[in-house]
Amino acid sequence: MANTLHRLVKFTVVAAIAAVVGLLTSVPSSADVTPFVVGGSRATISQYPWTVFLSSTSGSQFCGGSLVKGDKVVTAAHCVSGRTPASTRVVWGREDKQSTAGIVAGVTAIWVHPDYRTATAGSDVAVLTLDQSINSTYLPLATPADTDLYTAGTSTTVLGWGTTSSGGSASRYLLKATVPLTSDETCQTAYPQYSSLSMVCAGFPEGGVDTCQGDSGGPIVAGGKLIGATSWGRGCALAGYPGVYSRVASYYDLLIEQIGV
Ligand code: ARG
Image 1 (cartoon, rainbow, N blue to C red):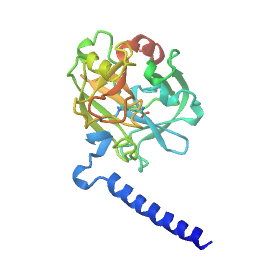
Image 2 (image 1 turned 90 degrees about the horizontal axis):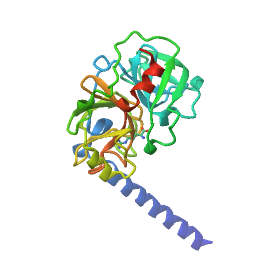
Image 3 (image 1 turned 90 degrees about the vertical axis):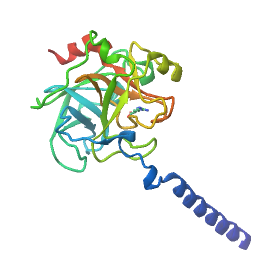
């Protein structure tokens, strides 16, 4: 009995020490914090008015998206596959998730690319139809003629309210980061599943800047056009593992069929 109690106390003390050590090692000091997307900074919604987020009916943000017409949003298929329009909201004009700024639109239809199975297999694109037309500037899609926008080294902007580190917590504010597109070879080397037909990759060789969980579906922009939707990656911001984005130009015709002109 006393022995059991003794062991229990010992176990508790050891567990408490382990928890404290775990906390100390996992919480970065202010000097090495890389806040925002990962390695990004605050973005104003007025500068990126076409950046929207998807939320549940209770208001919790789970993905990003891009307004490409008054009532159409491009996002990732893996964000909305299996969801009902009734359970999905699109929030426009709200930089701070804790504010009530902007518009919360309902969704009347969800189109998921018919070939979509998993993000790593490609076809990770979807179009949401809103229950209203939002009076905002929207982002044009990259077309198959925009090959220059997909050249390795092209500087892109990624945006979202996702986590600011792998396994971290989501951002309260809209964040943006600048990342260069990688070559197809670089991405293929990182990921055997990479396909230059359906995806494009972005990131620095040394990592440090990337989209992360919760940014999915959100925009990657080059030359003022939507060139991709945040899709997947190994961890976030790791050296040698760029972020993978759905290649919008590859789906141009299909998307335009859904969006209208
Ligand atoms: N799949 C993630 C999401 O659902 C996006 C991950 C992007 N990862 C990356 N390393 N860029 O939000």
